[in-house]
Length: 290
Image (cartoon, rainbow, N blue to C red; front, side):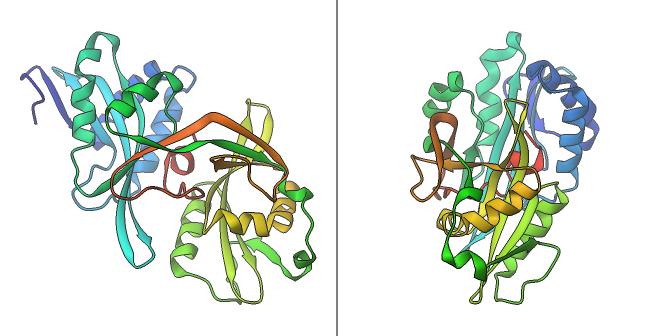
């Protein structure tokens, strides 16, 4: 499909474009290796997007030469009794000499209807641009917590274990699927079991400032669950060498010891469903390891 002329066009990224797109993204994100982008695209290759959505995203090319790309991670998620489609826009780059055509790439990515779009890693200098595109901020920053330090009389009745085991208490099948699929992506997937039910938690191992081991909260049913079970979950993570937990937040989180960093890792959305805090399932953090 042509965007403006026969020499410049936008189209979906295909399997044959992986090497070229990886090289292009290496130019745009020099802190990442070309092999990193090859691996990221291969992870997307193993996913089946919802019908009508791209597997990888969109490519802007001049002649046969890729000059821009935007990755899209599209998923169908169950939200209560509803099924909704969510697309995480990721790793947007256009070569400097073609920046005037960058909006063409974005317009293709945003052309799908009844979809909630997320931009969860926008650099601060791009905030005015994406706000002009109709995105609204839903997460103001991050809360950096030390959950292992919290103690509660309830802790003794709580069991935390790997998601490879099946809880004896009731749980949601959709949660088990999320835990298992994210464990396959290298995340730490845990059940926190009480007498009444099992609660899901997914964390992504990270290095803060490239030196401090920490765990980023990717998914839980409600952030209130993490507050409630902070001690047992936090100590399980600490035993795995991840005593610090990074949580999306709009302010200090009562009940957790830590500090709020406004403006750090702020997140945006556009569409019918405002994402909730504590749900980064199937986003670039989980799939691409950014």
